[in-house]
Length: 181
Image (cartoon, rainbow, N blue to C red; front, side):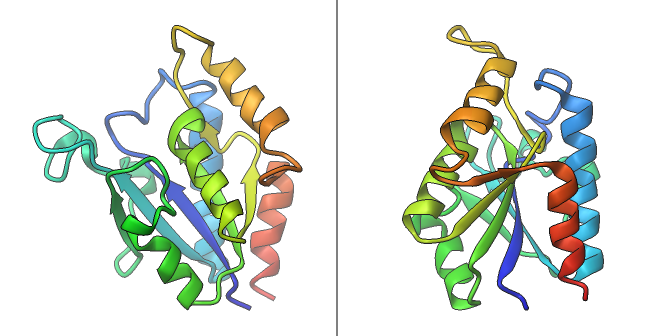
C-alpha cells in the first residue's frame, strides 16, 4: 500500500545546525526515518523554502541546499516553496500527493513553529492524516520563547489529537517498516 509518504521539510544547510533544539537527536531521528522509508519503499519527498533572490536563502545559494546528511536520492521528488506551508496550493505538492492516493503524511523537518506548523494545519484541512514523530522537528530560540518551549508547545499540546497524531519515534519506525511487508 503506497498511501503514505515521508515529507522532509526545509532541512536546508542554512538552518540545519547546532542552534536547533536537540539538534543531534533531531538529526539522527530524521536520518533514521529517511533510511527506514527508503528501505520499506515509502516515498520520501523533500521541500525547500526559497526566501527570494538576494536573501541568501534562495535557489542557487549554498544555505538553500538540503543538509548533506539528508540529501535526496536520484529520482526523489523535491518541491520548492515560497510560502510557509509545504501543502499550500502554490507548491503543487498537495495535488501531487492527492493524485497518488496518499492519505498519510509523516512530517519531519524545520522549523516547528513556522513551516512545520503551517504544513500540519494545511494537511489537516486538506484531509490528510498528519503523523509527527517525536524529536523529528525543531526550531531556534526566539525573543518570545525558547526553542525547547516551542517544540514542546506544538508537539505536546497544540497538534496532538487536534491536527495530527504525535507519535513516539519507535512507532514511526515500526509504521515505516510495516510498509515493507
